[in-house]
Image (cartoon, rainbow, N blue to C red; front, side, top):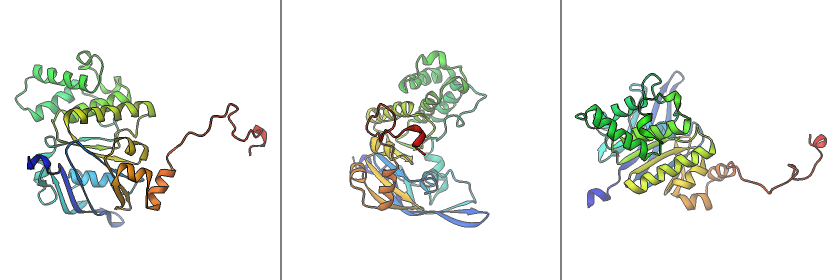
Length: 283
């Protein structure tokens, strides 16, 4: 029971310095947070705030020699900062990544079945082709890809962006992870498709108990899926707390600015101009 109660991800005073042609930049400056089983924790901020760098640092996917990490990041109890080999042990087993852009994350010259089958065999090396296909089609059905059996030999260009994102989720689930890191998983999708993908992630979480670290710049997305939110600016957390409190009663000016940037529907106006100003005069 104690093992189940421990965090899937435990980050303490994580610092990440990036070596650039202009010198060393501290992209992440001492952040601490946890992700438990069955919960979603979201890092939110504008581009360049350090949120994706934090996620890639936790997964040890930043370029070796160009990123210097310090602090602690325990994934399933293993400290990937102190021991880079630990990251290789937990990636594709304890933790999986859902990458940002579904249009570029998949190989265009290999079928969906080939790529999903390879992911399954990484987790279960003894699987035959037939067994991998059987498991893979079940995963495609799980992420709501229609007629998964006939889609097995199709290529990425034959799918829409929303369907490709679902396939990326299936590939991530092939590792049977306890933790998913979702890096802007809906930023390349339109609003309707975005809602469907978020609904899918929440449904999968409810059924499997997987924990999620969500990276987004969209506070509207964060409020839908999160248990806790950490608002990030210039590599630091400026505000942290339960999602409802952050959205309803923000205390930091930066958080209020992010909230103000969320589009809101105004009153319906049949003429298309709220003040009924003539088109020629609206200049």
